[in-house]
Image (tube, rainbow, N blue to C red; front, side, top):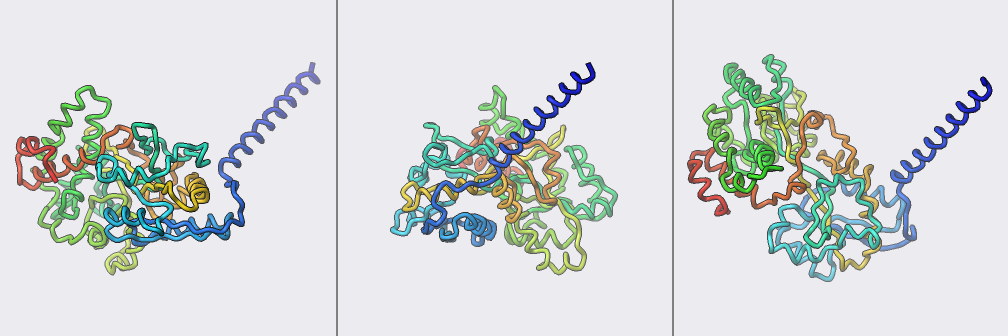
Length: 418
């Protein structure tokens, strides 16, 4: 009996070992890039975009060249990208890959641009496996085509000076009640504006209202009514304004919504700075450029703005998407580069270097993004609310917040904002 039992146990252990080996093999097959084309192929691949510097992508060029050493990859910045990209695609030296963005999806003037894009959902043709990408960030057209794929993600929130909270003995807020309490305590401690941002609709409003508004309308049978009435977002914003936690005169002193925002935050006297992950991406380079931060460095992190009673949420959306020019002279190798790039390791590496949010399903946030792991993530493209709705919302909200319109006036002008 004992020998029989021993044999059974050995048999089970052997089977388990085989399963582990198979599992490991499958995992390695997924993570290891196996070239599908002749690795000695010589060609050029050009990528066009609107980032002036894209060192993170250039790092991916080097990694791709380990497999295809004779493929020459280059990135070209196009000034006035919204206009010049169409001209570039029509030229003799058209880019093989070009940046696209979610805000193009509901603007008909970009239809010719997207019509020029390869259907990246056609894996039989491209060889691209999309399983590494967070599917909630993908947007398919009505004919199930996928003209663009996300490579970097972004969300709106706030940069928090954690050292200031420790110094004043204030808890970093996790819901609206605690946000109000924290702001009141900072005001009492002599901070003129506990929350700051560059003074524009595109800077102040997204962090305060996007997630709240989206959560109100998602999975809600009265969603259309709420969209039309902007309810209850505008009423909440009007009430929040009365607390005077954001001093608009102080906000006006910040001259732009990128470098100036970062440098103002690094002065070290701002508890909370409304920002997007795009702004966070520029912080590392500017730490050494700030005399105040160099003299007195402090710990800072990126948090959701907790404007809801039951906690906080962030609205996540692709920051940059790539489209493949279906008329590329080197289409096969271009798709091969995309197949290489759209893998967990490469997406995470791209996000780590650029200091943005990964589009992969395996989150490996920079420490600055650690708090984002404790908040709910909602996805604009999954819900299907396109850019024009948010544009109308933020302009209506900004007019209410700055006193230019009443709530009723803002609602009546919904759909008319430019």
